[in-house]
Amino acid sequence: LEHCTGPEQAIARCLHSLGLSSRAKGYPYAREAILRIYHDPSLAHALTKCLYPDIARKFGTKPACVERAIRSAIMVAWQKEGIPFQRMLFHERPTNGELFTAVADFLREELLEEAE
Image (cartoon, rainbow, N blue to C red; front, side):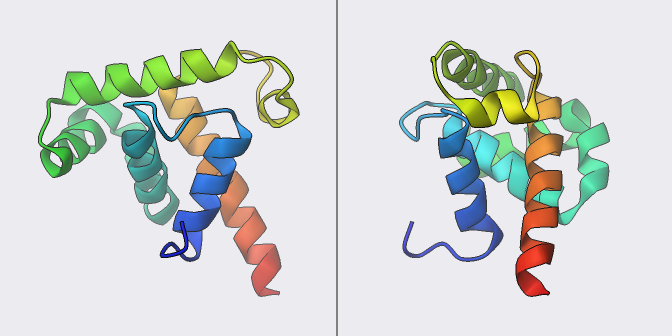
């Protein structure tokens, strides 16, 4: 992560704090989705029409594979015990879109505070 700066590094830290393993197939897709929504919040309303297809093209796979891999990574992370940051952001296992939006919003606030 040394090469990551700004939002990229913050997203990686946040995903790690939520229990998402960087070894999970959906991890790079989730990281990319959050980064895109961080820069353009309107994408949160176009997951299946825009976001997943764009990420699939970037990684050379299919949109359905992107969606499923992210959902699976969230499910595995949510089954882990003792991750207080998960419960701080969510009361129950989030959907892909809920995770993307919550993390992007959280990071926007965090990075805004750092800039002040």
